[in-house]
Length: 176
Image (cartoon, rainbow, N blue to C red; front, side):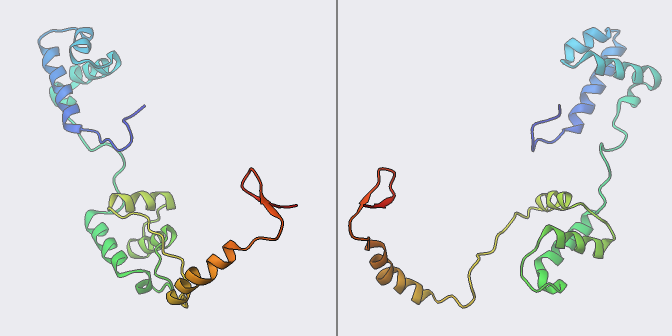
């Protein structure tokens, strides 16, 4: 079932709970009593007891971080961020827009690591980058002409109706 989205696992707390179970085993408590006392499932306590029986409390310590090792180191992520800040045009693209496909190619070029687009997206989120959308405006856009049109021409066009038209109950105009 896992944790709620965005909530991280506290590995030290989990280890402390396992070590507390080891102390309770040493005191002679049964697995069921340890399960009730710590508020964990009996299956977990059974697994802990088996490890404790084989190797003592040391067997219940965390050996390695959970999950797969990251393909990029912290220094590589810093370098990636430096390259991203330079912008896509510094990498030879014509537009100033980073896409996950472009960033994936950049990661492959810099570090020789291939990431799926979805993971590139997740990686950017971990780095604190958020999706941005450029304003879709023409370079030739004339703000003064647009303002003039909105003030003068648009009201005239909006106010004109064909002769004999009435408003429909649904808000549409209908010619009689």
